[in-house]
Image (cartoon, rainbow, N blue to C red; front, top):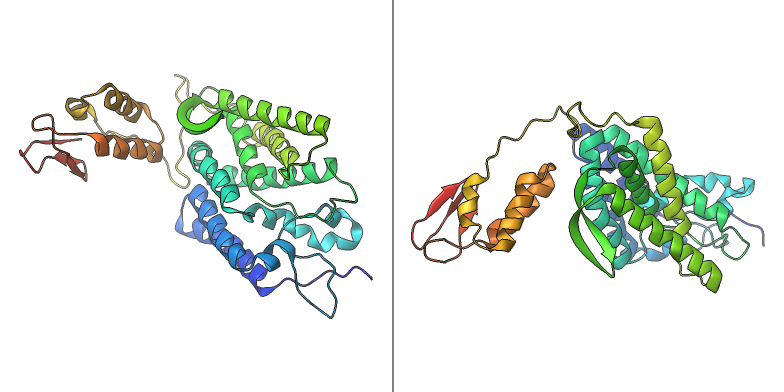
Length: 334
């Protein structure tokens, strides 16, 4: 049977419109690209659950024939001249995920690392690095692991792009500490220097690739895409950002995605009177030291939910910078 390039199903076309439309909408409305990419990935994932055959595999009957090609995942066979029109899937594959754990793991890590990095470099450089690193990661995996057996297997997921952001982050801001998930036995969230977190992820990926090659195992995870994205992130950061990432006094320069950053004048000293335990004191310390406003707000909300009234020991209420006790009338603000 002759190989036929299948036209995309309408569900795949809808997904492509969502991918492009979300980015355009974010630029027009000046939204953070990190949030926009996460939302777009989640919407595409929901559609993938409903139309998995069409979006993942391109299953269906078209023009009286079925070639096994199609869908929004990238396949190494698309690098051949005959199927080169399908090369656009090198971009669409970054928005497609095959299961809940797949998308949750990617987006969970991306929320922390992407948000912090975008605030440092602005949305244009952030999005450029994200997309190009994702493409480089996909192509790296396809070229290194290419063989007849897996040439038609679709490659999906945003992990190559996310590793690219991690690599660019580590190159430009190696000493910056950010809150991010770190896998050591189990995944836990901690404040860590970017360079240490990236070294950990890179070593893990290298060890896994070596172990799988020695054991002759194929796990189904595109580890070469991770390493390719990580390395390309380093290179892209060197080209687009360089080392001009700190002021003369050593403070990190932050950028809103679209506007000049404003210095935060919030004083959290009044909250020390309700930080009654070592755990709460540590949380408040993180709140005061955190430089990324979104991450700071997460820690602040977590802190306030655990506090109790210093007078009557009842739970406290909080809203719009005010903290109060319904029982005894205790009040403070920040």
